[in-house]
Length: 462
Image (cartoon, rainbow, N blue to C red; front, side, top):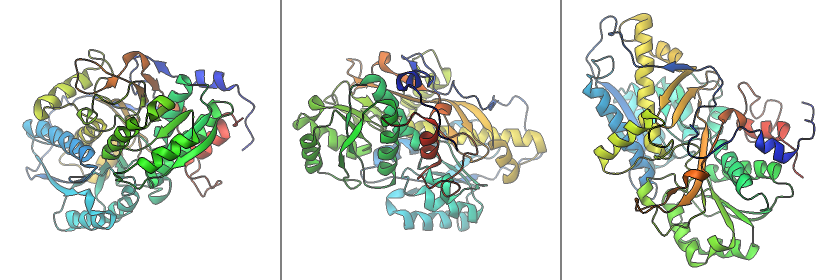
């Protein structure tokens, strides 16, 4: 492709379609023509069996990632309970779920997926948090022919390389590269004079992706930005002191942090003792990724708090998006806590399935075969608590506009929330490679299609 013409960075940033303030609606910028799903009003057609619809769900049930995993489990159960209260799928097939612990590791998870399908005869596979696991599980799901709706495990690698032509595998969470790019846009708007960049990331695929895509985008939005410090703690570390002292000695203006779950909580509490938040601006991709109550009031204000691209329970503001208002109310009543993005993803996945099954039933009658359900999922759009979700037919990836905001304490809550005036919403079409953009190894050797697209279409770094 030809090199793009020179583009003014500030004009380019302003042209990204960013909405500022709490009124923006995640998902409103989708332009792919999704088939928005409405509740079925016709009774099911044909004979529907009353056998249970068996689902296998793997997520972190123990260990440092349990906070995220438990939130996803609760979102899944809430959706299943609601659907079952109406008789089940098509009013006849109640959802039954088998849970397993993702802490077993990648090999253990692969064995468990095989057991779930071959021994337990599951109809659907859901869950998964770690982006190190979906590339291993995706090909196995395709081999077994098991309909799969990954709630997370957001790595671009899943559909860029591991399963480039998916049939059975879908994912409802936003693609991983959007995390780093969303934080870069938020940071560039908030701190355009911050040129010296530091990075602290978990040393595995998610951290590598965040680091690459944040730096890639930030250097194209902030003239003269340069990377001056990197820290790579192992996933599920407990002592971040050596990394904190190194970052302080390297003296960046801004720090991009991709730590998540218990790792992020341990990091911020240790960083407070060293005054790190007073000495540099901090942007994150997952500071608010866990259940809201897991972040204490001692968390500093003015941190750019990511939520894995697009869900925090207070956004959109109450009264602007009934799908979220009702979800938050029901979730809090059921579990006595507020939902997180994992809750939203697991909840939305089962309702996506429900909608596809209903559409397929109205098309063919009776209980639809997986091929028909899959054809309904491809290109489907629906309202979720996080906004509009669109499943792109070319790669089975879910897309939702992204959102991020600054931390602020509020006396009404025992944890920090977003400052409503700081929230920005970014159209997902402006930060991800378009449909059918070449994948890695096909005309380029970048790590992701998104990285290649950014390098070829965004302003060149100064």
